[in-house]
Length: 146
Image 1 (tube, rainbow, N blue to C red):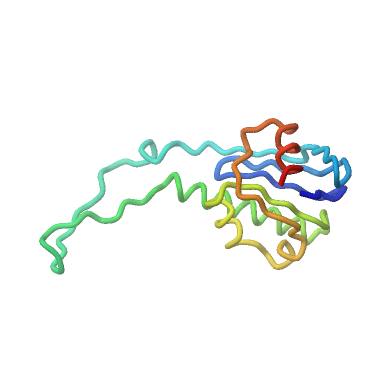
Image 2: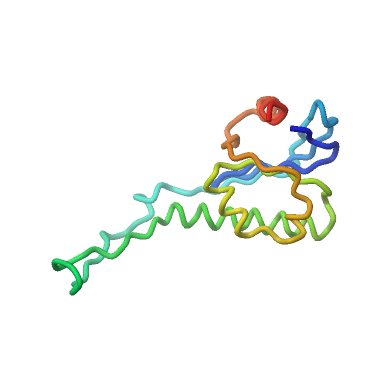
């Protein structure tokens, strides 16, 4: 993938976001970290306080459980929405002209729900991969191979 000089590259998942600026050229990126943020999001089982409730369902054979809320996933979705909001704020300040977003497929889908039109106009590419745990040099190499 061609990454223009000064392009903004965001590598995110539901718990970590890394904002980079390409200080290299389009052929050989050199990503410099501009911002890093992580949140603590315990597993869903560690966020629940009780078992799901039960209710009588007259349309079936008796009782059925209420659908359980996945608090872990809710927090990941909220974090993705927050990441999209930060991208919007920076786009509105003209902090970047070109944007590349790298995120796991589910997170990427959640980010897309919240993209502002100014973010969409600057979007140069998206990659559906989880690279948040990779060193910067490996992220650069993977981006070049796309």
